[in-house]
Length: 198
Image (cartoon, rainbow, N blue to C red; front, side, top):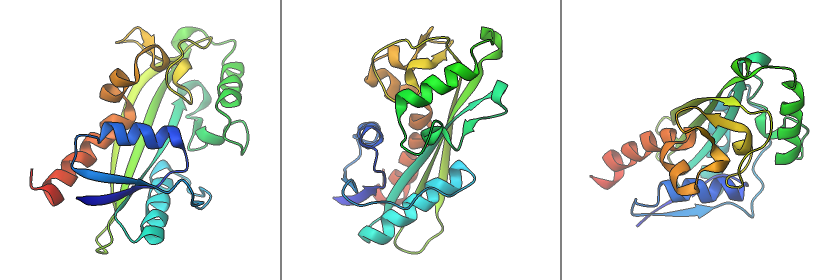
């Protein structure tokens, strides 16, 4: 069985990525006990590549990493690449949501449009070029938190087609439709074609 490192220090992301790719005959390894470099990229793609490269260098194995951003139209695309540390360097989910809701407090629903975007990078030990895959979901920011599932901004990201926030649907359903899933499905096809002969 081939081993692939998921280069993230976020246990929520690790569980979600592993669950989405769980049907592949691959053993996914965590770098939870290793400190990855601080994200310094100006784009989601740069940060995803940076983390995947670090994972590959630290483990000498194929490594994947993602970076995800919530882009709000009314805030000119913010928080975007700074989504995880929007309210400060601690990466506190609750503080990030609170700050975003406060910034949009006076905005009506139609002015709260947002896109959840995810970029997944894979770095292969063979020295081949790094590859990236992107997924996105369009929605709106709610006026208050709704739901108990998920993490990050899930409780305030409303998907019109569902009539619910990401936090109001089960992790199983979210893992079929989310921005991260859409990016990882592209990665999955790449892995199948290149390594698994599927």
